[in-house]
Image (cartoon, rainbow, N blue to C red; front, side):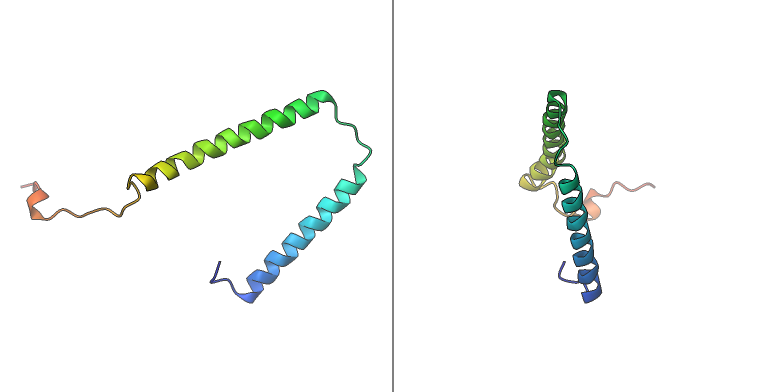
Length: 85
């Protein structure tokens, strides 16, 4: 993030403003929409599923950094080289 130019920051700001405007417009247009109980159940299941998938993706990262799996490889010297000939 610290290597972003001013043009990149402008693009990010414009995209955030645009998405906020669209979200506000759609939120205000859909105020009278009723969601059935099955819709709430689907949202709850989707949120739980997303949290489980997110935890499943992040767990190996956490495990790997805790137990040194993200260390750079160590090169073996000649004593570890079996040779092919």
